[in-house]
Amino acid sequence: MIGLVGCPGGAFAPGGRDALPIVARYSASISTSERKRLEKIADRLVVNEPALVLTSVFGAGVGSGLMEGPALLIGDDREIALSDPQRSEIHEYRISMLAADGDILLISGGHNAAFERYRNEVLGLGTLDVFTLPAEPRNQHVPLAMRCALHPDALNAIAAKAGKAGGLTILPYMGTGSIWVLATAIAERAGIPVRVAAPPPRLTRRINDKVWFARRVSEVLGAHAQPAFRSVYGPAALAGQVGRLARQADRVVIKVPDSAGSLGNISLNAANIRDHTLEELRTFLLSVLETIGWRGRFPLLVEVWDSPVSASPSVQTWIPERTQGPPILEGIYEQVVAGAEGAFVGSVPAALQKHWEEQVAHEALVLATLFQHLGYFGRCSFDAVIAGNDHENAELHWIECNGRWGGVSMPMTLANRLVKDLEKWVFVIVQLTNMNFKPRTMVEAQEMMGSDLFKVPGSEDGIVFLSPFGIESGSGVNLMAIARTVEHAKGLAQRATQKLTGPAV
Image (cartoon, rainbow, N blue to C red; front, top):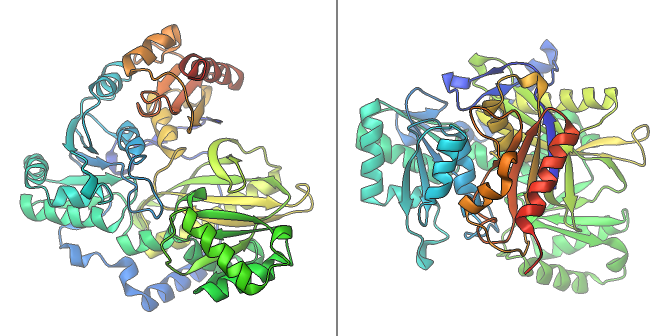
């Protein structure tokens, strides 16, 4: 599907890293009293769970942030529950769009030399040192960072480069525990400081946990700021709470808390389950959960599925270190979802009434500020819905937090990087999966674009490929169109998609 955004205002580079330009597109503020309240909540959360901010176990030279010198980029999602190791490769090259000249990209499997040449020669993003860790059936579920930490040749090569530079930043898709273990291994091997461009691992886990986030929303913004929900800790409680909410709403959703987006969502038509006995409902729900790969772990989140919904805004933020200023609101997008589970397929600019735009921006800033006080650093997005028949009679409900990079934030940052005159351009994102068309090599795909291919320098508009995967397997398309107008960008994106996918095979 298609997503687009304008690029007003100037960009700045956190930590002096030009490959990560950040653009503030929305403004909001919070009062001194509100800030103090958030600080107290953050302090209490840390007292109750000191490991939230703990990084000392990784060594004195390892911490959150960005530093000068090369970066090691890792686009691995294997530590997200229910993720598919084979689809993890999609992210491995897409994150390279955040890399600067001379950075290191860690991937599984083999090189895609054509895509590496494309990002260097066509987009002018610079050369990469690419380290590969061959995928094997026995280790395909093992996080890429952990495999690197245990692979002497890869670890020595990365440590040697970091040692010459005097330091290293690890820029991960998500700051999981294995990322921090690798940071320690590199710091100890090279004797240099290492920074992770992500929050501490326990905080990363909590913020991406749907149950934990729901509790924070209720605590900070009030119970009215989210759909009715319950966390359940066993099969009997699951059946009981689903049955109770099914009597109050048209749809109920079960969410695996540590999964991403719709991957762990089961949306249920309440009318189909209201007459079930608790035992029948328990058996049915456990069976459905097993079909998506759930392995029996509790808690699960049971939530009312808001309907009708008049808008689904998603806010992209950058959360700097506290000493570097408040969180930055880079954009508010309307999510495009498909299917009963609400699978993300793209985004468009949120066309909200002014008062809704202001409320969305303010509440997102409140949540981001709480996280900043907890020690969060890096990319973060917040997903919400405006529940109601229309904007005038509705409520804003926050439903999910993504404490990581994603399908909007990576191309958004790349567009900031490619387009210098930010006020005059928009971009469109196409993210299509589960398709069936004739596979194209990256060279063929570029040739098919003809004069529509975006090139640096020289192009004023055109198509940017975000990942080689999907196109090369004939299973999907992930690209971006840059142009001066929405209509032109949409036309470019649609024409490119039609050329690539062609007739089904």
